[in-house]
Amino acid sequence: STAPLRRAGHTMAGDKYMRTPESFQAVLDRFKKDRACAVLRTPTAEKCAPAMDAAIDGGFQIVEFTLTTPGCLDRVAEYRSKYDGLKTGNVMVGCGTIMDIEDCKLALDAGAEFIVAPVLVPEVVTWCRTHNVVIIPGTQTPSEAYAAYKAGAPVQKIFPGVAGGAAWVKAVKGALPMLQLNPTSGVDLDNAGDFVQLGCSIGLVAPLFPPDVIAGNKWDVVHANATKVIGNVKAALA
Figure 1 (tube, rainbow, N blue to C red):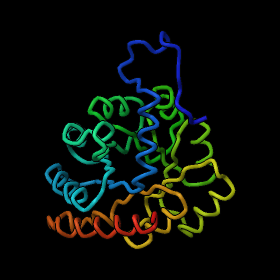
Figure 2: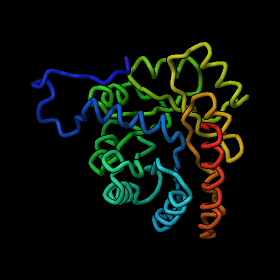
Figure 3: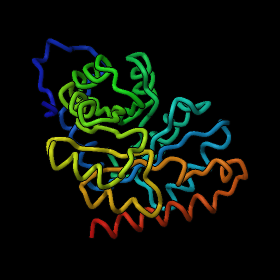
């Protein structure tokens, strides 16, 4: 089950990584409400903040900094202190490319409000589930997505993109309605609404932050991309 865990007080007493069932649900509620997450990977630390600021100014309310970005954890801490999304209703901040439990702990220490992984590592999902931490692990097939769900992942990332796109997602959700799919690779500025209409949350990576745009410091382009995709998401939800 992916329902929040309520454990006897003594079992996890003193564990600083334990989150509450209420915060677990609050993260899921934000994904259900806002749907779109800006997923940023930059080759240098100095590109990170202006790129993400442009996405936020363009309308993104959920953001993910990936551990492949230099200085990632510093940015997680900075943006969490700046926005504190779950408490203020402002921007919610997560950390991606989490590969093991130690990565989880580092991300949570920095203030990450949710965890994303490119692959399914069952012990990481179990650890997060036990601690009421929302984790979105990467899966590629219906069997992997269901295995992630059974391990305790309340949302299942589809990565990389699959042939058929929204039609694939529709078929899988029809057969496995308990899944909450989160397509990432393969989602672009124009088709984002197609996935949202199917009930998915989505992640935007290169279409939102094109490598050449980041290299050229063209933050106005990132802002325009964000405005376009958020507009399509809102239209799909209307």
